[in-house]
Amino acid sequence: MSSLSNQQIWGTVLAVSLGWLFSAIDIILLILFQEEIAADLNLEIQAVRIAIGVGLMGSAIGGLFFAQLGDRWGRVKALAISIMIYSVATGLMAFSHSKPALFGLRFLAGVGTGAEWSIGFALLSEVWSEKSRGRVGGLVAGMFNLGTFCAIGLFQSPLGWRGSFGLMVLPTLFAISLRRWIPESQVWLSFNEAKRNGTLPHHVLKEANKSPLISAFTGHSKWVTYRLIILFTLMNLGFYSFSTVFINYLKASVSSGGLGLDKSGQLPFHLILNVASLVSVILAGSLSDFLGRRRASFIFCLIGFIGFSFLNVNLNAMDQDPQLNSSQLMFPFSLCCMGFGINGVMGIFAPELFPTYLRSTSPGVSQNLGKGIGGMMGPPLAGMLVISHGFPMVLSLPGWLFIAIAAVVYTFPEVGGKTFDD
Image 1: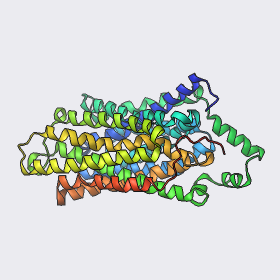
Image 2: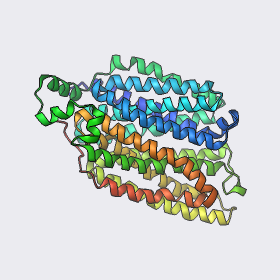
Image 3: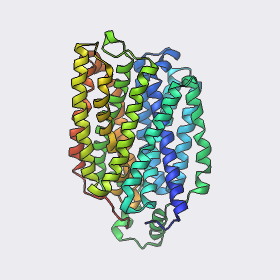
Image 4: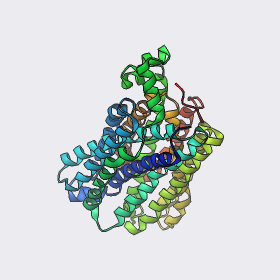
């Protein structure tokens, strides 16, 4: 347990939560406004989907390089830098008038969001009690869904895409004040003091003196890093292909196989997506304290597989009879979203797998390479498959990815409740 006061601990939880909430707004706004942006900039819709992938590629770069700052410079300082990068870049998107500007700013915003996830959860895992670490991790992961609610609110508002993106410069003010009222992790400070004094075991000191990025790929934890990259690739491939295609399915005309819903008609689906995801990430995080990280992950992967199987059956039925009520999709759709509750476990599970000198770098590298690879592939690949195979087939694919995700999770050791002592 951290030696910080309760006020300092809860202040840290609030800071990490707000950072994750802001990054969610940043990511989801582009997905929701993809058609408006394409029309305003006179671009093909596929170009905006590629821009989503470019942002995710930026996340991979952020994870590779900026997440190292959390292990080298300290968690709090690095967290503030990452928030400033993505909030300024996203705010400047309000002034984009060309594809190069759109792509460039999305890349920079991705760099910031890529670093923020791993630094924030590394900090959180080191200040909260190991007995209930999963529970608070699930609560913080739920901030992504609250951020999505905020993004939906902006999408439904009269601000339009430029006004909505312009508001995202506000988190910069939060980042500037972050270092003044959030203390640094005592685990990180103690480890680095021992490193300077030379009191660490020789094999630990040898690894800790390397570049964190080199150590992540060549050191004692390298095979954990490689497997974690595969896990996050599968998770992001499923999430980004599903989210972008399902949103397009809601908008697409009935003649082209979609539901042809306007903004108000799409709103119930957006709300269900977030309510189901919010409940599931909080529940998954809490269950991981009692059942273990692996068992909790397996349960939600199973829910996801069942949900996508039901969704496929219902989509095929509606494809055969377009007169069926779209409300019948609500239940299987909510189960699909609950499957992604596995994210409520991963935020805490990933840093528990690594020693202090890699607790930001290795999860950041893994999560963001996975996001870059899976996210970059997901939207364009799913978009092409919709043209050749239709919505029902494409929207069933993430269910099979959940089976692969569960298999990879069980290659890791059970580390729930681990005490950080290097």
